[in-house]
Length: 68
Image (cartoon, rainbow, N blue to C red):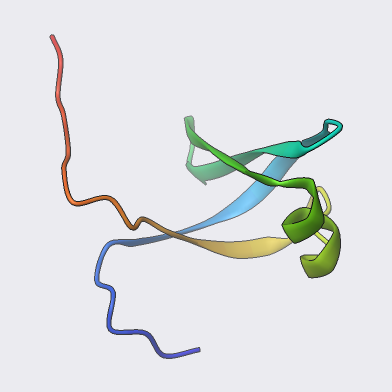
């Protein structure tokens, strides 16, 4: 898949939690870093997301906030 977005992180899904409306997807980027994507349940089911799948996290935010 080719995209113009440059802020992409490749990783592996380590957990899928489906709620009534939303889905919480944990993605391992590189040991031990993990990001969490919160997407609609419909999207998670339509993509057939499951633990062990190789995926690309595409970040569509215009800001990065760093705290210390």
